[in-house]
Length: 218
Length: 218
Image 1: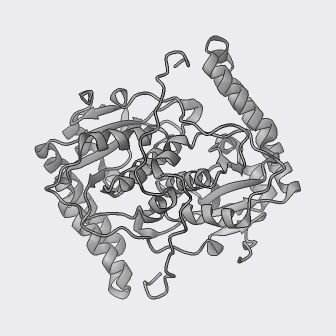
Image 2 (image 1 turned 135 degrees about the vertical axis):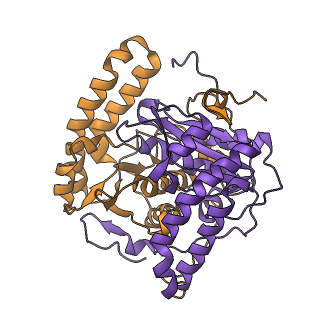
C-alpha cells in the first residue's frame, strides 16, 4: 500500500487506564458474563489495536474472524470443548493433585472449555497457512487486542489448544484450506477481578551479556 | 510454582501514558540514540512487563538475554548486518523502486542493519528449541515489552531476520544448542517521533461470523 493511499490513523481517546496498569493486569479472564454484550465500538477499537502490531515489511497478514452469532458460537464452543478438556486433563490433572495453584488453573481452564460458546464474542486470528515465522505477526496483534480490551474493561483469554484439531472450527466458519487459525479468544465483561498474575521474578528469567550470567539484583 | 512460593507482583507506578496511546504509538523505532543509556530500572520494568504475558499452563518458557557489553553488541550487530541487509534487499529492493513507502521502509531497515550494534541494549528472547507452538508464549511477551518501553519513552523494533542463520549470534553469546532465539530487539531512546503506523482499516481485515462476510461499517 503506498503512503498516498494509506488512511490517517487516529489515536483513540484515552481509556483512563495507564499503559503499565493495563499490561500488568491483563490476566486470563476465563469466566465472562454471557448476558452482557460487547459494544460494537469497543469491538472495532480492540481490532484496530490489534492492527497496530508490527509485521515483517508491514505485510499485515492477520485476518480476524469475529463470531457473534449465538448458534455459531455454540458450535465452535462444542468443537473447542472436546479437545480442550482432553488437553487440559492430560496436561494438568496429575499435577493438580499436588499443587493447589495448578488445581485452580485446571478448574478455571475446564470452566472455559465448558462455557467457551457462551462468551459474547469469539475472536479468531487467522493467517495464510504454512508461512514461515508468521506467528511473529499474529501473536503481537493478539496481545495488543487483549491489552486494549483490558483498557476498556473487557476480559479475554488466549487459548490455542483447538489447534491440535482445528478442522471442525474451520468447517463451522467456512475458513478456507489455505488459511490457518492461531487461537480462539473469548471476549466479554469479566466475572473475576483485574489483578497481576503470578510470575517468576525477572532475575530468574534474564541473563546479562552471556547465557547463564545472572542479571544483578537491584 | 505453588501459590505459596509465588512472590506478590506489584503494579508499577503509572507511566503517564494511556494504554491506548501506548498501543497506537508503539511503532518500530529503528533509529536510536547510541549515546544515551537505558536506566537499569527501566530495563527491569520492561522485562517484568514481558513476564506478564500469558503462556500455556503458566509455563513461562521465555528467557531474556540482555546484551549491554559494547564489544558483544558490536559482534551481534555484525552478525545481524550481513543476514539483514541480504534479506531486506532481496525482499524490498524491487518494490522500493515503485513505491515510496516501501523505499522509506527499506532505508529505515538498512539503517537498522548497519547500526544494530550501536543500540544501548539488545534484547534477545529465547526459549527451548523445537517446542510446539511456543511462539504463542514468546511474541505476546515481546509485545508487552515493546509497549512498556514506549510508555517509558524507549523505542524498540521487533526483527527476526537473523533467524535465517541464528548460529553466529548463539555462538557469540554462549546460547546452548537446545535453546532458540526468536528476535533481536534493540532498545534505546528514539530519534524519531512517536506516532501511529500506517495500517489497513479494520473493515478490510475482519470478517463477521463466516469467512468472507464483511464486518459492517459503523
